[in-house]
Amino acid sequence: MSGPTTGRSQRPTSARTANSPWRNWAGNVTSRPVREVSPASAEELADAVRKAAADGLRVKTVGTGHSFTSIAATDGVLVRPDLLTGIRRIDREAMTVTVESGTPLKRLNVALAREGLSLTNMGDIMEQTVAGATSTGTHGTGRDSASIAAQIRELELVTADGRLMTCSEKENPEVFAAARIGLGALGVVTAITFAVEPVFLLTAREEPMSFDRVTSEFDALHAENEHFEFYWFPHTDNCNTKRNNRSAGPAAPPGRVGGWIEDELLSNGLFQLACSLGRAIPPVIPSIAKVSSRALSARTYTDIPYKVFTSPRRVRFLEMEYALPREAAVAALREVKAMLERSPLKVSFPVEVRTAPADDIALSTASGRETAYIAVHLYKGTPYRGYFTAVERIMTAHGGRPHWGKVHTQGAAYFSEVYPRFAEFTALRDRLDPERLFANDYLRRVLGD
Image 1 (tube, rainbow, N blue to C red):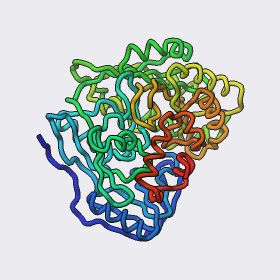
Image 2 (cartoon, rainbow, N blue to C red; image 1 turned 180 degrees about the vertical axis):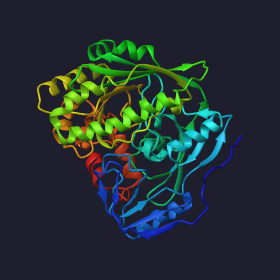
Image 3 (cartoon, rainbow, N blue to C red; image 1 turned 90 degrees about the vertical axis):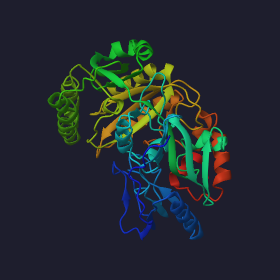
């Protein structure tokens, strides 16, 4: 049974000379495309790809620019999917939703909730487009439920020769195995079909906990909760934990005032001021961290999934995240803590730890192994290379895989070692895009040429 189509524009595609550079959300990546196009349908996008190939121009698609790498940067044709939005159909028998690739996750979550449906798991923000989020491997935390890309049941994409290809476990399965996290290297995604389920309630329990306790009990906390994550505040022994589990209800969302204090005043407004002060006067950061790590109090609330999984993130930052074998996470985190204690580095942002089950996507950071993620952040404008380089050394020593959309320095030689199916992906790329129409400097580095 099909549901309504929402928000899909029928305006003709537009092509224009790019008069100003494109910048990502964090402001650390800039590119100058020759022209920009805004196709209003998959057919118009295919036509734009064919025209770019005829003109000898590379093609990249950009969503909301939430990647910290240059994965979407191009000096050729920049595709903006602003008109490729909305739900194409809802199949309540198959329990799937098919959505245009440029649809922001925020709009999808709200529309699904209106229909009494939900994704099973999601990341901690919902500003990205569905194609941008899945193509880079965006994930939340989960004992049993995996990344957003792992919830895909079918993909539609435009290949380098301008064909519209549908892929699933039954149709073009070898493409489906890779393209769910395709890095923009295999084609331009035009639509995604996700598995959905009836909307449910989650009870979130947020609680301060010491570093020693959360690391010593990490395996138990992971096993006992459907979704567990925690944040450690550098220069302190303080952590904040979050346990999300399904609930029979009733719904009990945070109070308007209390929710605003926690999510806006403390987590965004005052945190912004603290980060600005720390950037201007780095020696005060440890003192600020001790205060801010105690500011968030324990709380419990129950709501529909996207209101529990996601939070507003208004403070701009740079981020690096590595996926490790789950059994290596605690040792690696303790090494990061020890490194910071003996170094002059001052870090104002908490370190985030999440988990994911193994999945079967070729270049998923959780491909083939139970995974834990360790993410480090620094406030926008703060020198980051020293901190990120030191953390990266620790992560790679444990066989870590960096998030495709977050800062890292690795290349194809490293990825061929940590991804058993790396050659499978690059061989498929050779077949689908032999002339490298979708290449850019980032893909040349991480996939080879």
